[in-house]
Image 1 (cartoon, rainbow, N blue to C red):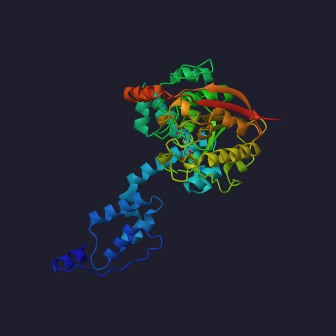
Image 2: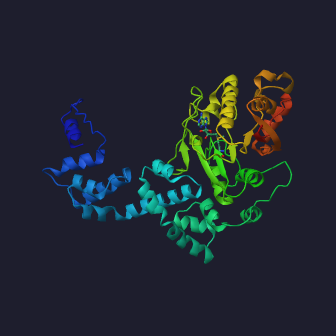
Image 3: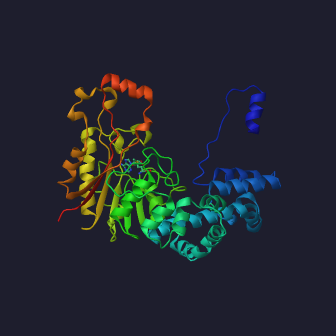
Length: 411
Ligand SMILES: C[S@@+](CC[C@H](N)C(=O)[O-])C[C@H]1O[C@@H](n2cnc3c(N)ncnc32)[C@H](O)[C@@H]1O
C-alpha cells in the first residue's frame, strides 16, 4: 500500500507488481512474516494478525501462527484463547448433532476434517456438554432462551427434552395438532424446524410422515435435504437421519453431506447408501419441475426439461429400490405441475404438464407400490386478490394440491 501511495504521489499510472504463489499458505500470515524483517509489527498488530489468521483458518495451530508472526507458541495461544474456546464448543455441537442423528464416526471425522481419535475424544465428553443447558431448562428457562445462551439449535434441545417420550406426547409438547385423517393442512412452516430455503416444507408435515411411517430410532434418508427440515424434525422425534444435497453448508448443516446426483452418471454407486446399513424410510422432496429453478444451483434437477426430469426420476427410483432393503418405505413429496399462470384451463395440454399419474407411471415399473396418497395442500394465501381476480377473468385454474405418495417395495 505504501508503494502504491508513493506511485500515485509522483503521478505514475502504471506500477509493476510481483505475483507470489503462496502454495496454500495463509496470505495474512505471509504478509506478517514479511513484515517481521527490518521493521517489527507492533504488539497490537501481531495480536490482531494472529486472531484474523485463526478466524480465517481455525485449523492453524498456535505454534504455526507463532512461527510466522515471530512470537512464541505460548504468546500466540494467549492471543487466540477465547476464539479457540468458541471454536471448540461449536465443533462439539456439530459432533453432538451428527452423532445424535446416527451418522457413523468415520463419516463425522471425514465431514469435519478431524481424525477419528479427535471425534472419539469429543464424544467421550458429550454428557458434560448437555449438563449446563439441561440445568438451565430445569431451572425454568425456555427452549429459545437456552438455545441463545448456549448456542444450541432449538431442535437439538427438543431432542434432549423429549428423550424417551412416546411420539404422541412429543407432538403434544411441540404444540402440533396430530392429524388423524389423510388431508394435512398447515398454514405455515414451523419456524423452529429447518432453515429459510427455497421450497421449504413444514416441519409438521415431516413430523406426520415420521409419526405414521417410521418408529423411534429408525434410520431416515433424505437425498435432497435442502434447508434441513427432515434432520431437525428427526432430532425432535428421536429418529436417526442421513442426508445429502448438492449445496454444501458445512458450518450450519454439517449433517447434510455434499453429494450431486448427476443425471449423466446414473450408477451413483459412491453414495452413503453403498454401506451395509439401509434406511427404513426415505423422505424425497425434490425441486418440483421448473418451480423456483432459478433459486437452486444451476445444475439442479429443477432446470431439466420435462423429459429429462422424468428420466431422472425414473433412474432415481430404480436406484433407490436397488440400494435399500425389502422393508424400506418411500415418502415422495410432489405437486402437480401445469403452466397455469398464463393459460386458461381449456387451453392446457397434457404434454406440458406433470401430474400425479405421470409420477406413478414411473414409480410402478421401477418396483415401488403405492400404499397411501396423502394430500398436504399448499396455502392459497400466497396469491393476492389482484392475481386471483386476473386468473378468474381468464378462467385460469390454479394449483395448490401437494401430495405425499407412500410406497413400499414390490415383492
Ligand atoms: C425442494 S428442495 C428440498 C427442501 C427441503 N425439504 C426443505 O424443506 O428445506 C430440493 C433440494 O434438492 C437439491 N437438488 C436439486 N438437484 C439436485 C441434484 N442433482 N443433486 C443433489 N441435490 C439436488 C437442491 O439443492 C435443493 O436443496
